Image (cartoon, rainbow, N blue to C red):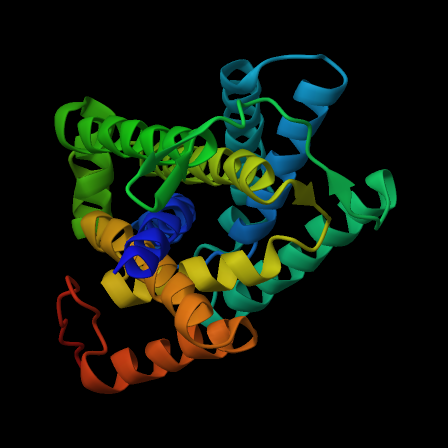
Length: 292
């Protein structure tokens, strides 16, 4: 039982990070029906920005987190303006290929500037831990979970209580009708990319602290797992992305704890296949009918 509880604690910490990244996927898809495969690399760049802020500027955790979120938000807007906006009326396959190309571009441009070697993240949080019986909880895990919860609460407030949040929901429901009602669709889409990218940047900083290492290709696998989490919860559903991220994180740690850590990635993608077969819309997703 103690091992199970320990794996649950580890899984919630990891799942909180996946949830932050998955929110960006699901928000962008909900607005413009695009799977932004460059999103995982925005998370990687956020991790490097946090690394620079803590290593060279000697900033603490929260200032570095805020700087990484702001820089990632600006990068998200830039990507949307440069790569996706010109293709807004193009075929879905053209936009998808562009997203994959943008992902590789970000990875190798970053590799050109910072090198391909793995870097160790500086210690910005206490290594203190406390025991609940035989279950060990360290301060890093507490910071990660609390930060993720606070950011998700802020996101829910923005979506449900603010004017721009209402605009986002309107554009998601019917872009043409929203434009006829005076909503600035382009601004709303850019704001959606900014919020999703800011959450990814926060996730990058949290991962750097959690695993104590970063590299230019670190965004590939977590980005894909966050996409699985978004599909698992219901792509386009914000609560679904949160549930999916936590579920994937917990399942991954349970496989590592009770089975073999080499198979945890295979298990995650096997879950995706099963979900797509049984419930293609995901746990909280809605089945939509398309006209033929």
